[in-house]
Length: 105
Image 1 (tube, one colour):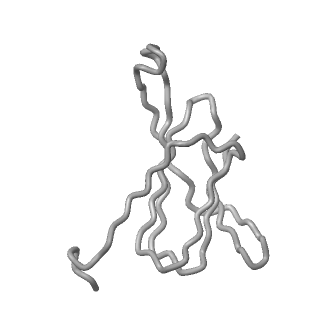
Image 2 (tube, helix red, strand yellow):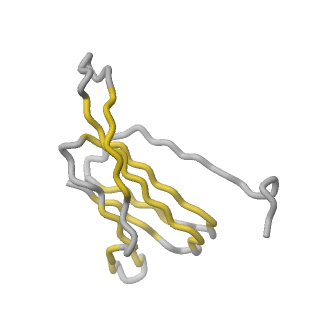
């Protein structure tokens, strides 16, 4: 087992609106822990997590789904009642070649 000094941590942050209403991540290498956090308006549906088999295009709903936390965030065009949700999903011990997809409506 590697010590904390030997482990590498990466944080990727995107501030985009996905027009296709999905986000997909492919692992080209093994990964010990993968966390996805999506911030979205409360009037949008909760994101659903899927595992995608890139060889067969099979898409299977993950057993573990994102947890949702409601929050209030001010200053969206001076609206103090700008309501948002935060969905968080975590997967440990990802294997090279796995792909995960998050869809919402």
